[in-house]
Image 1 (cartoon, one colour):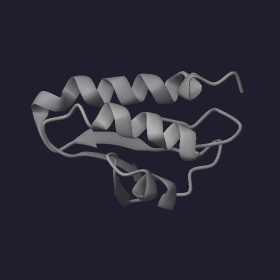
Image 2 (cartoon, helix red, strand yellow):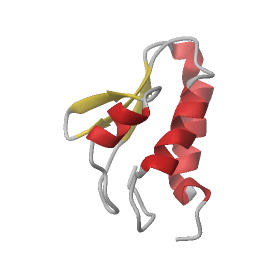
Image 3 (cartoon, rainbow, N blue to C red):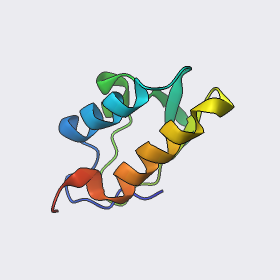
Image 4 (cartoon, rainbow, N blue to C red):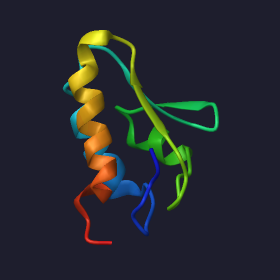
Length: 84
């Protein structure tokens, strides 16, 4: 998926991802350029340095967390609920 909002994946956006990832039974990850970050950690997400236009992948360690992955993907697709 592509980060489409102007501010990229910033702290407020990362916090929204964390709130969704906390619903998972197992770990959820966001990957960029082969680097994986724990989606349950704002700091981990921010270390990926994802500006507008970068591509990320969301995956879960457990198949039963598919709904959480889809929720995070929707959030990213909807520009983290921000107008920009």
